[in-house]
Length: 318
Image (cartoon, rainbow, N blue to C red; front, side, top):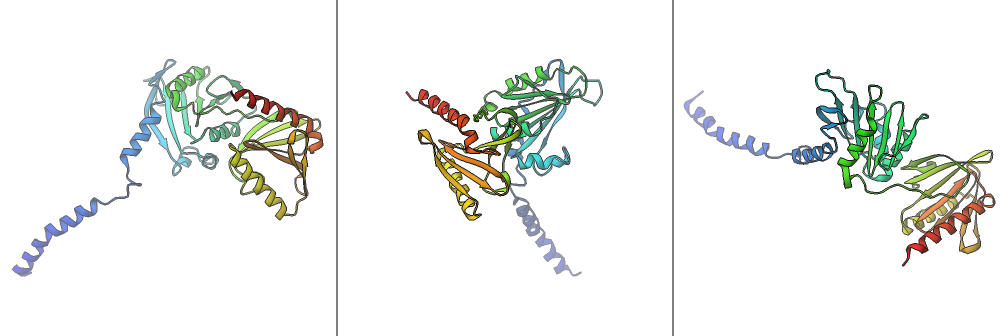
């Protein structure tokens, strides 16, 4: 290589170095956002006490998002993601020096909304669970303790007998403070018999792509099971759902009879070739209905439910 060629190549080195440096400064902030990731980690980690009920937090906290949740709960990740999951923080508790196996593992799921947390805690129910006064709704069973607090769902799994789960749960609730208490989930249903179960369906209730955010409660009515539902959190939402449901029934040519009962109560009675008899009505901010029950059979508890609701509402008005 000639002397002039070497001189040209040497003169290009600063240019090449500048180009490499400039490219290195360009990155996708969504893929490489250490500041936000650290903030998320520290905010949820703050809900885990260092020491509680004689146990200490072991090792580093672990965080999982939608992209890697399956690494922690393989085969069950889609249940949480479909229910509104945002992120999971995992902490382990034990006695330092005992070895690597923890005595209690705490899973804290951020579900984004109190209603989504409610859906998860009811969806993960087991037969031997008993209610405990932890958070806004808690259950203790053979596998451990589960409860919700605002938009958070917590699971505490014990690996020893008589683990201090309730004491740990109360300490976590205290650490969460106002960040957890964003809305207690209470649902009023007509008294259609003995309550059997309550669950939340986030999307596509009864296979209808517009029927979302539904709370369903099953009742034992004489010899059959009735499934009642409520949907909507504002008058606008309930009106829109009523309109879409009527449009769907008309399109499918499913017979609907509009009935106006005492007190101005308008009920739509449906004779469905697939679902059988069911009905629905709009009462203020919610759409209410029941499958497996005729309007005639439901009229007494339905009127009592509406009257009680309106009386409660009138007492709130100054």
